[in-house]
Image 1: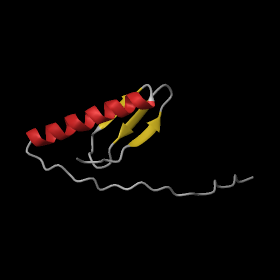
Image 2: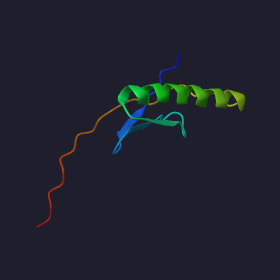
Image 3: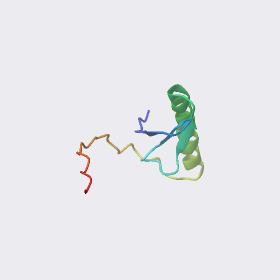
Length: 76
């Protein structure tokens, strides 16, 4: 069982996500639950395609982190 980090981005009317460890693997959804279900399916299909193409399945290698920054001051 693999556990991949996904990055979720909010759009105007939906959500999208991608997997940093699996370039090209992405999905969208109208709700958070729909996005997670679609992402799970996208990852499964992506890994199946890699196996069919004889590619090595990469082990998850991404870690989440946040960086806090103060917004820059406007120049008068």
